[in-house]
Image: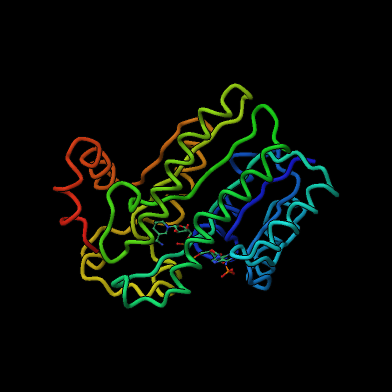
Length: 250
Ligand SMILES: NC(=O)c1ccc[n+]([C@@H]2O[C@H](COP(=O)([O-])OP(=O)(O)OC[C@H]3O[C@@H](n4cnc5c(N)ncnc54)[C@H](OP(=O)(O)O)[C@@H]3O)[C@@H](O)[C@H]2O)c1
């Protein structure tokens, strides 16, 4: 049984990944969709081209959720053809103003869960399997006032880069998408009221997802939507961080 595992599948990018995945990876027979809000997944679960759907209403900040996922893997022994580590969140504001438990929760979902789910999924992958990580343009340059978030996304991009090298001999491909701002629940969850965010060009969720799946299918490592953010990625590579960090303040 060829399975696609998608975290954060209840809204935004994750929901769109589930809806578009079959177009690029028609071999998928079953979707394992993870998010706390089961009902939001149930709303669209009938639109996945007849593939089976299994919903995991897990809180990915909690270690017990990894045990539950691991137990399902042991019980079903699926072939994970596609893993999309998409669930994530971030809070906007000064570090001393954001409640510590929120900061820690975002680290748990963005860093701990991504690492745990990937490690658990890898033994069930074969030659041709794909791992996609959803990072952010925030991973290119540390962003003041999204300090924790940008640091977690730098982790995601770095983790993906190293893992790509590790699993290449096994024929498993790793890709990472680094989107700019998008109109999803992310902005409300994170209390984003930044003037910088208001001035930036927004990425279209559907285009980000189709571009990412196309890039992953080709085995491309990094995908950034929009020329503006591609240029930003280039600048981040060639200019010193000390110059860019004050400019990249959110
Ligand atoms: N929107 C942007 O501007 C933007 C820009 C760059 C990168 N990104 C990244 O894109 C990814 C998707 O975000 P989005 O924009 O689509 O936002 P979103 O609509 O808020 O989606 C976030 C998803 O993550 C899930 N999630 C959050 N906390 C969770 C937890 N503790 N356990 C399990 N699932 C959890 C949510 O599901 P439940 O609430 O149902 O659990 C939801 O499905 C994130 O990694 C984000 O960092 C977003």
